[in-house]
Length: 482
Ligand code: HEM
Image (cartoon, rainbow, N blue to C red; front, top):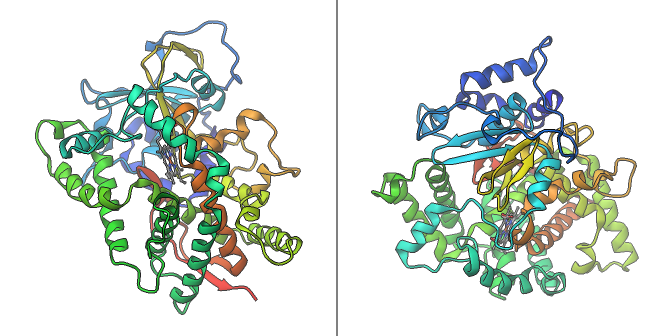
């Protein structure tokens, strides 16, 4: 675990130092010990799912001590208010302090954090038919107030099951999603053409984030509305930039509301009022899916810009496939290229967009040697697992070869499935996964075949705004290939 945390520090450059401001003293000491030479770090080895000889009671699970009612909320209180944007790093540092399992009470919710995939696998294998998960309460409250029907994301039980059964038939069946591959391919072609025009004299795209959001809206629009929205036209509708701004602000408010005390239910706090104002715009047009895809693609492009060797491997695979197809490579052929898929998977691991997944347990379980009762909220520390040297050899390296036939290929079934947790698990797994993957394979392939990507600025790190997003503008240089 010691080595793995050092890896996290190198993966995103200096970003870890920022997290110190939200750490309590005991954790600060913990992280200091990690870099010290002569201190052993307390590590609980994982047992690859083997039941322990004796199961210890829930109350003896280690974790940071909190105050009555608010738990450890005060640990996250800094000069300008309550901040949760480094939550993923705090979780990982606590894991190095307490081991594969620890408990932390944050405001009203007691979380059991698991940092070993073999242990979290027990949660996955004990999913309920109607899984119970941590809900976006402020969003549910907002929809209720506005009289908007609760959708698949904000409903539970039978209501959720009915909606899920309807959309799964369309969205999770590969052959259904593949019907839109050609149109999504055209959107990707248009985006590549647009990149040519909007590059500045350094070959960089000044506002890549907005551009990728426009691409994601256009691409998803093909599936959802079965028509082109015009976001990639020469002068895209100004609503694109405006929605992005509202969306960013909405997410920030939502994050504060979610982890803090639910005071907004008693009186409408300033943050809640702002949240409503931004949500009114965002829900009229776009939901969080578009933003997830554009953020995931940003990380993919960044990973490629930092790894020219991988770009060349990818370009060779695409060009060889094009050669075999007689020069015309169809969207269907692109979406089945193994190395392209491996690049996307490795990006999910090395530059994760999702730092955790969780469930309320439907049954009592033994986890990491402790009894955890039904109803407990159990969270996987994915961010920590992805960079743990126990599971991934040289985790600091961007190595898509882990996921394709090669000498680096991972064969362990549990470790192989860790990046898939980006999409969640079981019956509530992301219903848009197939669509998102198809969109990403298409646009990445087309960009890499047309441009060489490079990066000439300070390293980018993650910050938490519901998903892990780049903490600064990503200024990639796109140089046309000959
Ligand atoms: C890179 C892009 C995306 C990522 C990483 C992602 C990830 C996730 C995750 C982690 C969940 C929660 C799963 C769980 O709790 O087990 C989820 C749920 C969901 N996602 Fe996605 N998602 C992405 C894109 C999309 C897109 C494009 C759509 C729609 C077209 C979509 C629709 C949904 C829906 C409807 C749910 C709720 C499913 C339910 O509760 O039954 N997602 N997504």
